[in-house]
Image (cartoon, rainbow, N blue to C red; front, side):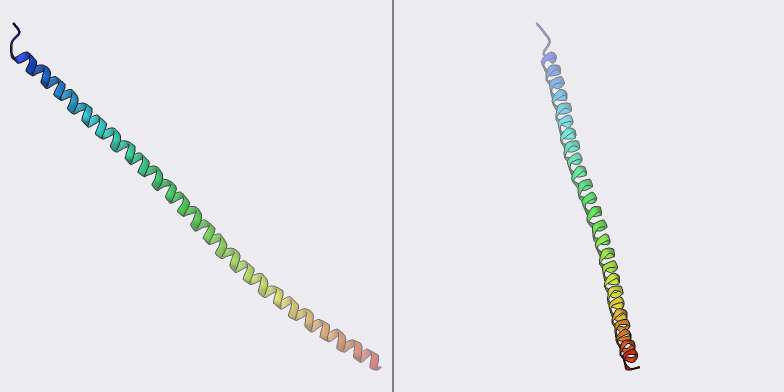
Length: 96
């Protein structure tokens, strides 16, 4: 007849295996969820960086467009002055 302690030892071994398996499962799920959060966070950061870069480029292009518009207006006014001067010169030459 086997001693009465052997079934208790077997139950303890099974309990230890169950606890180790449970801890392993918890660690695995924690690691999986942490990896998922890390991936989402990294993607969010990357998208935010790209959006900030695009916004900076847009502001830069807007400033350049404003400068080009100002330059175009200056050229138009200079051409209008030249045209006025040429008309005046032509009238003066026609008088003589």
